[in-house]
Amino acid sequence: MSELPDPDDLALVFKALSNPTRVRILQWLKDPDSFPPQLEPAEEVGVCLKHIQARAEVSQSTASQYMAALQSAGLVTSHRIGQWTHYRRNEDRIARLADHIRTEL
Image (cartoon, rainbow, N blue to C red; front, side, top):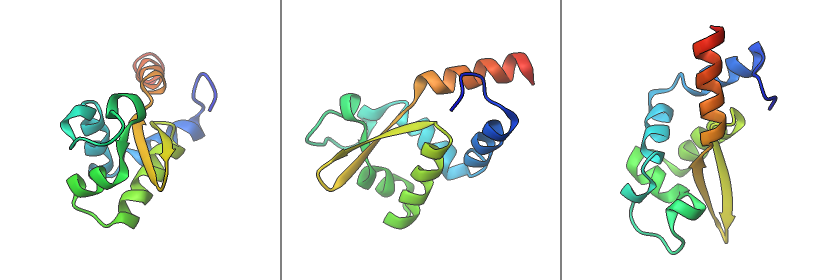
């Protein structure tokens, strides 16, 4: 992803944010400690997909698709621990996008 988003990049972000559940997931990830405890601290490694799936009340495959869309847009990053993938917000990217939207759109 480039430093300043181009129109295609912005469209990918807006597409990822066009689903209310994906928007809620981003909101939930602002407070990773609100999820159930896990072996590795969520503040450090992110929130396990199984916890995101449970809160969103969707299947594992749907949760994976949602997170893939958010990751493709650069809004979250992932970290594998064993068989589980953990996700956290990409705060730098979100801040840059917010600044760009505020000043350029």
